[in-house]
Image (cartoon, rainbow, N blue to C red; front, side):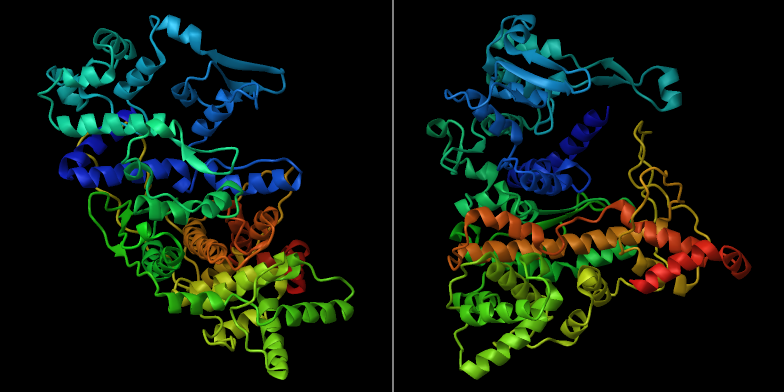
Length: 616
């Protein structure tokens, strides 16, 4: 029922837009399926890949849909794999047998055999099966109009209740019969010339079929190419966007960068997804992040091929789905400005950098490692490098080749601090007022301090209660699915001091005993603030990803490719915020909201919390 409702709403939107907008919307929907969602498995993939790589397990991420890459593995004559496991969408690729579920406790698995499926459907061919699925509709295409359920509300009972009776429900068997009768899905569509939007329906069928038949995958040569490249249409770029450099595909495959910012450039759509708790402050922080997002995309465009220049990225907001919102300004930097920006991330001298780390290791009990290189240390080290360079008259900025992982990580963080105005953009890289705050922060909490400063810059860290937008108007007809924007629960009064303290503490991780269930009350204010933190955190990580891409594409780095992913895992803001991160704020709000006599009576537990916080 939900899929039918989404198809009807998408159909109404398609009637309002022209053909070009429809193609752009489909590209955006395609790339949304490829990992743009915040609440799906894609958000866990970086952590999964990091764990597998640290355990010595070879893994990589498919450039687009995973089923196309798995199909390529299954079809190789070298028998790289015995079979593949995945969803039923693997049937699009013509794999003979597919494992759809594995029960590790019972040591059994469920599988689908294509030949048996074909026989059960009347000995259809694989091409006919794909056409049947396209006419039936799935994530990338709507159901063919003659196959959609028709409703009737003529009866008095249905009219009084406001519900419509399904007169002709959807039938997969009917779609199968139509394809067997007319041989192909194309012929089926041509048999209904009087359908509204006939041109768009046929165009959608051809484009989605090309997506399935010529999906880009990785070859053994580490090159990304479409399936059946010789038969691919010339306008395949209109479906998947312009081709990316091989270095970018490599970074995506290794999990070194997230696909979010790359997908924005490919689809020309920046989707603002609905948060768990919507607030006016959350909508304001998205607007305040537009400047940084434009700078990130401009940096990428400066090093990407010319086909990416002049692209217009439209912002799609969940609360205005049918309104064409503001677009991000992407201005490619001229070569001189781009070089000046990239030079912020290059070392003054390799010999000075190595000598500095050698001196620091001799005076410390532990040898410096890339893991110890954090933002406060980068700022402090930059001052020492500047003094050493002045003593040696070394002004060679931006001309040295980056050869070691330590140098690459230092350059990344240095340019990151420069882009966000924590260091001056001149050759001296002097810390600004914000940079001095980070420099004085404890290395353990440098990420948390950075988030606090960014929230202060956007005026999102305050002692005032969050304000919530009015609930959306009720639908014209009752919907069986629950609303995605529930009304906020009434909150008890809270002092401004408690608001500010608990929001800051909600940024701190809290270790919870896995044996004790979490019975904490749901705090709407802290969860709403957490959504603001997540948006800021995601933008900061995208900034680091764009800097990494720009350094590698400028061909100034000769670090071994096997080390790139490890360096990315060590950069700040890799771990995405989780909902459990607000536990510290909830605990402290519960404690601070108690009456004073209650706080004194529970001194054994409360003082242990306070002493622990003071120790940290």
